[in-house]
Image (cartoon, rainbow, N blue to C red; front, side, top):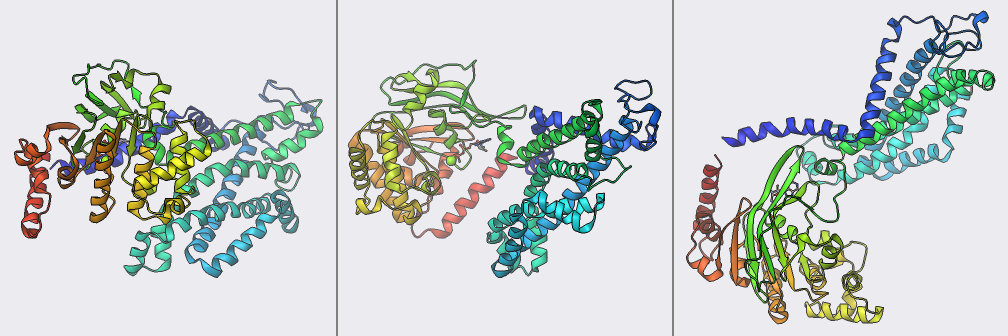
Amino acid sequence: MTIAVDTSLPPVSRRISSWRLLFNNRLAFVGLLLLGVIALMIVLVPILPLPDPDATAPANRLKPLLTAGHLLGTDQLGRDILSRLLWGTRLSVTVGFAATLIAALVGSAIGIAAGYVGGRTDNAMMRGIDMLMAFPYILLALAIVAALGPGLMNALYAIAIVNIPFFARNVRGVTLGYVHREFVDAARLSGKGHLSVMLTEILPNVAPVIVITMSTTAGWMILETAGLSFLGLGAQPPQADLGSMLGEGRAQLFTAPHVSIVPGVMIFLVVISLNVLGDGIRDVLDPRLRSGALSRPGPVTDIADDRAIRSNTVEDAALSIEGLDTNFRSGGEVVPAVRGVSLHVKPGECLGLIGESGSGKSVTALSVMGLVASPPGVIQNGAIYVGNEDVLAMPETRLISMRGNRVAYVFQDPLTTLHPLYPVGRQVEEAISAHQSIGATACREKALELLEKVGIPEAQERAKHYPHQLSGGQRQRIGIAMALANDPDIIIADEPTTALDVTVQARILELLRDLQRERGMALLFITHDFGVVSEICDRVAVMKDGEIVETGETREVLANPQHAYTKRLIACVPELGTGGAFLERVSGLFARSEMEVS
Ligand code: ADP
Ligand code: MG
C-alpha cells in the first residue's frame, strides 16, 4: 500500500534538506569550504614537497614573501614559513579538537549524570563546576600548565579542563528538561537500568546541544591553545604551532611583519570558519528552522505575484473567501494545503467549518488575516473580502491593523496562546489598548466588563491571576474576552472547545453563540465534531483534503448529507446507548478511508 512508500521517504528527504539548509546559509557554506581546504592541507602536509619545518639556515633569515623556494618567506632562523605554517596549523587544530573532544566527553557525562540523578549529587557536582567557573579561565589554564609544566600535552589538558564547565552546565540544563518526561518514565518502568536510560533516552536528546556547543567552542579552544603557546607554555621550540610562531615573530614585528602576520591570518581563518560553520550547524540542528529555511516568518503570509484574483460573489457577507489556494513550499516542492476554497459568512451568522484533522481548516482560517507562517506558506490564488475589501490586496500595515480589531481569533489551547508571565487581566487590557487609545483606568474598567461578560465570576480578583491558576474553561473564556475586546465584525474560532471536557464545552459554546447573536458578529467556527456544529452553526461547510466537498444549512446537511464523507462524519457523533454500534461505524470509517488512500 501507499503507506509503505511513505515511510521510506522521510529519512532521505530529511538528510537532503539538512545539507540544503546548511548550503542555504552562505556564511556557513563559506566556512565549510574554507575549513575543508585547511583540513585537506593539514592532512596532506606530510606528503607535500615542503622543506623541513625545523631546518635552520641563518644565512637565509627573514626572507620576504614570494622568495624563490620560500613562498611565504623565512623566519628569524631562516626556516621556511610555509612549511612551519602548515605543520603548525596541523598541530594547533589537532590539539584544539582533542581538547574539545575531551571537554565534551567529560563535561557532558557530568551534565547528564548531575541532571539525571539530581538532589545532593547534582548539588555537589554543580558546586564543583561553579568553583572551576569562578576563576578567570585563562588564568586557571595558566595555573594548570604551571603546575603540570609547560608542554603541548599539558596545554591541551589545561584547555580541556577549563572548558568542561560550559559543557556540563549546558547539558545539565537540557537534561533537566527531559528527566521527568513521560518517555523517560516509561523506559524506567520497562525495567531499564539508570545507565541504559541515560545512554538511550537522554543522550540522543541532548546530543544536538553537545554538537552545537562543540562547534561553537572548538574555534575558541584553538585560540586558547595558541594563546598558551604564544606565552611559551604550549608548543616548545623547535616545534611549530600557530601560537608559538606568532610569539616568535613578535620580536620582528616591525622589521619583518610577515613572520607574525602569516600565522595570525591563519588563526583568524581557522577560527572564523569554525565559528560561522558552528552557527550554521546550530541552525540546521534546530528542527524549528527546518521548514522555515533559516528565515524567520514574515509578518504577513506571502502572496503570490501571479495570484488569480476572484471577485466577491456574495456582496452582503461579512467575510467572503473566494477560490483560496494556500500552499506550503518545502525545498523545491510545493504542497497544497487548501485548494479552491470559497466560504461566505454573513453578519450575525455562524458558519461551521468541519473536517478531520489535517484537512486544512486551520490553514484556511489563518489565511484570512495572512497569519500562515511564510516561509513555508504562500497564498497562491483567490481573494479574501472583509466588507467588500480584498485584504490580500491591502498594504501590510493596514492588514495588520485589522487583526484583532475587525477580525479576531479564538484558538484551541489558550494555555499556549496566553502569555504565562502576565496576569490575565493585563492581557485583556493589552488586547484593548492595541487598537484603542483610551486611558489606563478606562482600559481596566473595560477589561473587567469583558471578563464579566464572558462569565468570569469575581472578575476584579480573577484579573490578577496568571493563566496557570485558571481552569481550561476559564482560560478559554479569557481567550474569548480578548477576541471581543475591540468589537470585531468577524470572529474565527479554531476548535475553541476541543481541549475542554464536555460540560465546559457546552457552556463555552452557549457563551459564544449568545455573544455572537447579541453583537451581530459573523462567526466562523472550526471543529471536527458534527455534534458541536449542530448546536451552534446556522450553516456548515465540510472540508476534506483541502477542499470544500459540501455546504448547506446545518439542518439540511444533517438530515440529508450528499457527500459520503459528510455521512461518515455525521456517523461519528456518538448517541447515548449505542456504544457498540458507534464503534462499528467508526471502524467502518477508518477501513473505508484506508481503501481510498490506496
Ligand atoms: P486542520 O484541518 O487539522 O486544522 P491544518 O489546516 O492545520 O489542518 O493542516 C492542513 C495541512 O497543511 C496538513 O496536511 C498539514 O500537514 C499542512 N501544514 C500545516 N501547517 C504547515 C506548515 N507550517 N508547514 C507545512 N505544512 C503544514
Ligand atoms: Mg487545526
